[in-house]
Amino acid sequence: MSGQEIILLLMFGALFAGILSGIPAMLAIAGVPLVTAFLAGQFGLFNLNFLSAFPARVWGVMTNTLLMAVPLFVLMGVLLERSRLAERMLTILARLMGGSPLGMAVSVLAFSAIIAASTGIIGATVVMLVLISLRPLLQAGVPAPQASGLICASGTLGQIIPPSILLVLLGDQIGNTYLDAQQRAGNFAPQPVSVADLFAGAMIPGLLLVGMYALWLVVTLRPKRGAGPPPRGERVPVQDILFTFMPPLLLILAVLGSILGGIATATEAAGLGAIGALLMAAFATTQNTAARLLIGAAGLSAFALVALRLAGLGRAALDTPAGMLAAVSALLIGIGVLLAGGRLWRGRLLQGALTETIRISGMVFGIVIAASMLALVFRGLGGDRTVHTLMAGLPGGELGALLLVMGVVFLLGFILEAVEIIYIVVPLLGPAVLMGDVSPVWFAVLLAMNLQTSFLTPPFGFALFYYRSVAPRSIATTQVYRGVVPFVVLQLLALAVLIQFPALATWLPDRIFN
Image 1: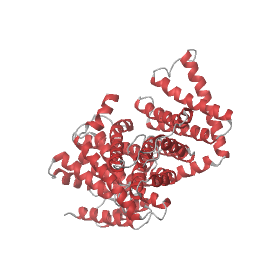
Image 2 (image 1 turned 90 degrees about the vertical axis):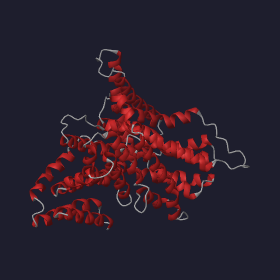
Image 3 (image 1 turned 60 degrees about the horizontal axis):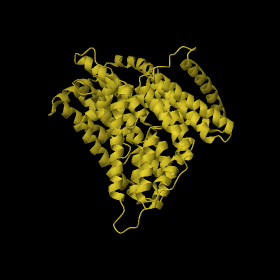
Image 4 (image 1 turned 180 degrees about the vertical axis):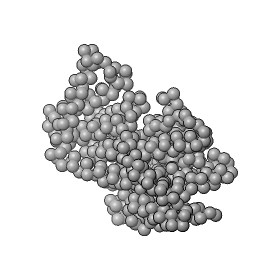
């Protein structure tokens, strides 16, 4: 073993020790490699000139237009969570499904799948689910461990169901890593990978996972023999259903439709989502009828503009009916956004949402910048060559290398957060997989589904932390751990199905974009 390889092993050992010590992850991810680089440089094992490239890397991160989508998607999720629209959605679903254990559990799962496509923020979603659904689940007769596992697992669906912040970050890393790996392999014109590809690729696997969760609930919560008939659902007024579910569904259709339809980049769609969430939050919290009508008209106008662009009419001349409709819609949107923003500001909701957005985005970008230092030092120590040589000697070729990466990601999920894993594993181990014929979209969706387990695996599963922070003390931590085990197994089973059938992730992007 060479001196550089020994230094690499020591660096990663110190890195994990630093993260587990409780210091901020961003300081450990950047500080340990920096100290390692200076120490290795004293022994002639690292060229300190490599560090001169770090400012350029930071500048590249902060000017990356794709990563600008992160704070916009975060703002979209925080606004929806704070507007209490989600609470009304779950209440109506529960009334429709009845008060049986199975009906209530399926209601929570269906609600989580809808809200996952609207927020994608693990902490906010899990806390919200605990506050509004734990007690109804327990009162309906769902055992505490299973209710806990369902809430934690459902709260992580936003990581695989697009639009997802995790997929945006993966799109950035997979796109760059795939381009670099293919050029090293001699392919100087590889097909670029976009976030839109990942969004399309993750839709079927995400729905597959929801279906597996639902099947598990049906099997485990079905009425016992001899039990009386389950409670029947209530008749809910149609207008209540429409005004509760139509706004978030239209928002999801507008954001995903604009990306998959090729009329907007992920960043532009994130901006549309943030504007739509602002209008929805104001509509849900405003009592003034005139203001609600104007804000609602602005939201419908935004959806109409997206529909016009998808229909190929968005660039019509101003003197045509389509052009006039687009101009009026744009004017309504501008007025509605100003009115909505003013009302949310006076209600102190917008300030809190902006503060939370800055906090979450700062954490994400801090880890991204810190990981740039780690990748730089790793390459300076010859780590990329070491990893390539190691994986080339594995049995099974590309499949063996893929399974190794999946195993490493799963194990890291016990101690690291998903964002940290993305910016550590993908640039370091990804090139060895992506130099061959492995589909980068398939690889990214596999990583996303694998990373979803990192939120549920103890001891550092963040969904477990968020759940424990607001759940009643009467539910023991061991009950929570026991409840999430079946859902982790289901996630691994879905991962195995996706490995066996890559077309689940590649068919839809091929149909849409090719």
